[in-house]
Image 1 (cartoon, rainbow, N blue to C red):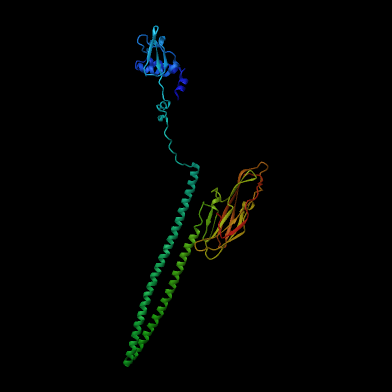
Image 2 (cartoon, rainbow, N blue to C red):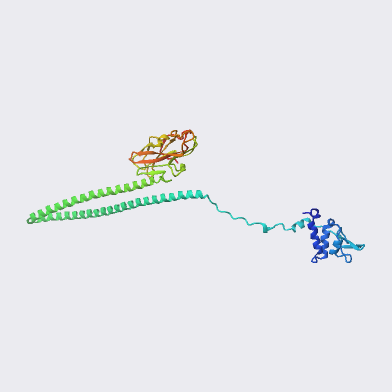
Length: 423
């Protein structure tokens, strides 16, 4: 604030005037300091009395008005006091102040009044969302545990079959050793037979005995030869068994890999030995239902869960034919295709295909103009049978907010798509 602005603002201030009086009365301030205060205030305070004897400022002079001090131009930095009449009159010089320096002398930063910065709060989610996610997470944990247990059972069965294969391989090795031993015996017998023939030529007296022995040895040779043939046939059979078991293990591993596509919200998929089905998981909004539609008033659809159904074939030899039909109350408001043929499994990739559904308004069972019942849910299902003799049941539900006439337009079309699945 400029000096002129300060004087203009506070020259008539009663608070400032009282402060000046307290300074003039106080013995703690020197006369020079009091003179400077009065000189700074200047004309705004008119005449200020001073003592009549020594010229010093005192309380009596202030109260009785016997001395006046007038500002004069600054010359020597001293105070000149003149007496007139019973008292004395003097002039105080008002020094010139540099406004910028005065501004610098004022502490404008009051750090004690600045509150500390609030701590950042952690990112949180709504309790309802956390609870929903907890339920989904627990369900996923249960499904994961069940899958692990099933996989452990399959692995145990596989290890048992591998152990059986190892046992059969040991048997094959043993049979090979027996065959080698028989071949060695056969060679030894042949050598003995040659030796006997030589002895027969050199010793006719032993002809009968040698002939009998020769016949016996020939019989032994024939028996050993037959035994070797049997062992050879058994080894071929064992090799075929080993190959068949290896093929079964590889087929089971491939089928297991193909069936792993079936996961998601409990109740929204099903799996049998050769076939399975699953709803597109991105359409799941109500995990209490499978196929589900909910309407508002009598002319609006709130949402539809299940506009398509994915079908899978885990068999690597034969395509799967799925036959579909509606049952229960679903025959009134749900249309499905009659059949869909899904190609066979290719390696570890299951055969895929999906059907699309058509939802229709339920126009019967009305309760009158104002509705006999509110918030009713009608139950039905889709029956699925396959060419492998397996069957699936897919539940469907239709919820009305009011039980009058539904006037909304049908949603979806009936169709089939082969070789792909609906997300």
